[in-house]
Image 1: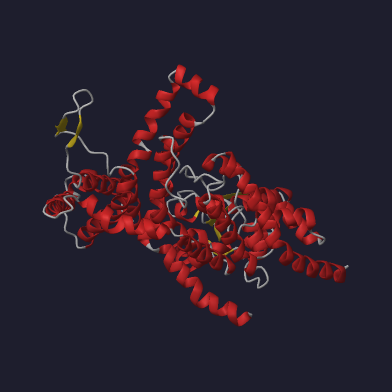
Image 2: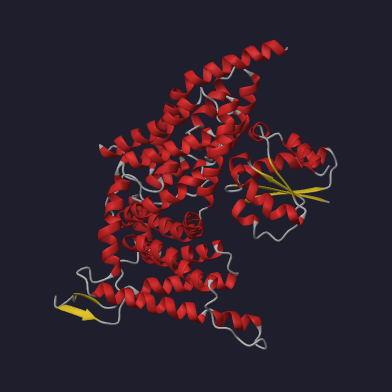
Length: 435
Length: 101
């Protein structure tokens, strides 16, 4: 065992380190985490406007609240790519250790690049005459939301990268020394900024020559759609769960390493579900970014809330009883470090089996329940880490999902039970020996 | 006044430990300030730190963080896994004080 631990410390830990330090993954992760208030605004107002309780609906309609609630989602959920491109661009600039104001400039340049790729002008049927009318000075919203999110991520990573190349090779406008440093700094951004503007102008022009006509259509067809297919497969999600559990087995924060990939693959799916929910129809995606917390990681990585309950009510050893009481409140909010390090789950060759099986089982069961229509798909709300279980389900999917979460906890108890009994018996024997 | 900073992935589980450590310090009448934050925030943190403790789940960051902060006179260490799991604030505080020698 000591040999194995040594090997892990030597090879596995540095590998996890490299992954978690990767600038691009970190930028995606940090970008999405600051995006959270905006996604929450969209989600909460959508929920408020669409709660299907008849007296509530007639009340909010009568006092115009329904109308007021409806404003926010149109410019948050439906335009999330606009915010994402700025925040991811800024986050990557911060990873390059640029000054705060330079990072903000790079974020703004990312937003610019995203917007410049969208050809202006919309056309549609006029309401009364049913004639086709075109308005040249309007931004089409097609690619400002979920459909453009992938482009936003690419641009959010590309623009800071280009900017950094200029800074690294010192291709900037140099001011005489008499110019105050703050002013000199904004001037030094000019050469990279103009270059980025030209490059993205050129990219837009080149795309206009192709059958795709614009960059977003290209990205959507070539990358977003195939990636969405990849994400829609439960096998992909199970792979992420597996990697996360294995990392935790070695005592490394698996969620932190898997999360950027989940964001890339599943954020758009969540937005699509939220848009559908706002329109009163069921979401098209059975797997979204919230599936992680709602169905797989119930009570923390490895789905350990059931285990906490087992410990509090079933443990015969004082050791696990104490740990259970310590771990249960945090576990109810999805935080389980007391379990992973206190039980411990880390390098525990008995517990690795339920650590891997439990989250996969609860996820697959939920997926099945949604496939056969007993549970509705998630409504697309992003659930912040630390939201209490069951309440999280209520917000993310409604009362049926909340009930499902209780069933999932029962599943966890059943899966963990035989393994926990083995551990508990050992602990009881040890405790008798020491008395 | 001793300043101890704990870092982990999201600063959540370390904040649990912080409370336990503060309780232990209180019973010992120690003058100590203990705070928790995500590792990504620490680099921009302007406050004082004498001892920097990493949660075991982010121990792969140790080498980098040591290289970055030890020259500034900050003691850096990883919290023992078992103590972390049991939220043994007293023991973690004791170990931290030992770092000062």
